[in-house]
Length: 172
Image (cartoon, rainbow, N blue to C red; front, side, top):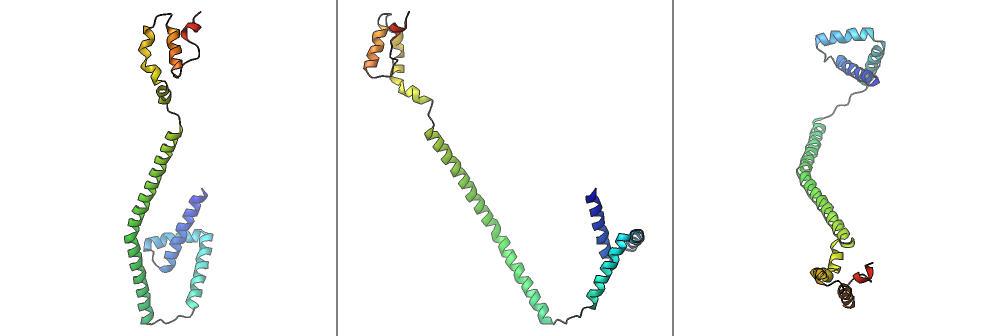
């Protein structure tokens, strides 16, 4: 609600400046004068603005020559040329900076992925460790009931990773 009032006041004060400059159309001027007659705060602001403008009119005027105008126009031209040069080169720098930033982010992501991949244990490591046993998996079914324990002992003696007890010792 306060924002709406502030926005309305800003519009009224903008109309006030146009009113003082004589820039309002006749019907707008009539509407503004009606608002002015009903609003004491707007009247006070009109008097304050009018006094400030009267004080500005009382200031002595300085006479500037053609040289001042020429130097001012030259300075504006140089500033505009510098701004144009900056505007022309700026997009190239932005693209280059964006490419560097993107490359850095990708390099950091790739480095992080490779570091995590190198440090974490892989699920296949256990299978690779037990590969000699897995290669002879078919042989497990071919042993006779009394030979199974002997087979595991021979694998253990061959320094393969096996349980400490054979199948014969686990049976009831």
